[in-house]
Length: 123
Image (cartoon, rainbow, N blue to C red; front, side, top):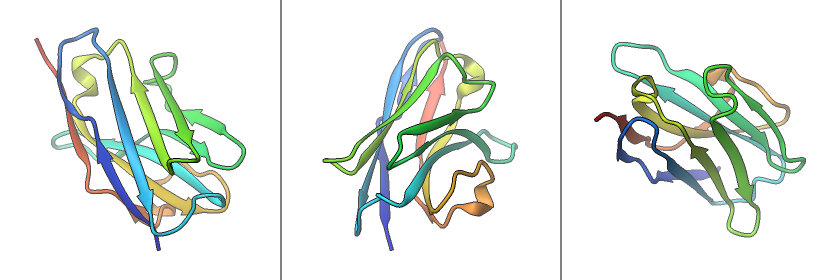
């Protein structure tokens, strides 16, 4: 069992930046993949980025590639999502999630979820 807690959301102007954090507790993530997903109003939750914790391997959705960077601090058991050049269409509730084993972009593959943090991009 792992508990995940996101932080760092807020209101930012288009073109701005935010860094989301996802703190894990309960056990280590050495054998996990951490994923970030987002859900905009009246839309389904979608994959944003993931990191294979032990290897540092990353994957991104095409919509955020080149703008977002996922990383992790193993000592702090915390994952990060650095979001640059934000656009209004990035507005959503952002969730971090974890799964054991291999990388996956499907949300149903993830077993543990945080409560989400709101990101609003607006002028």
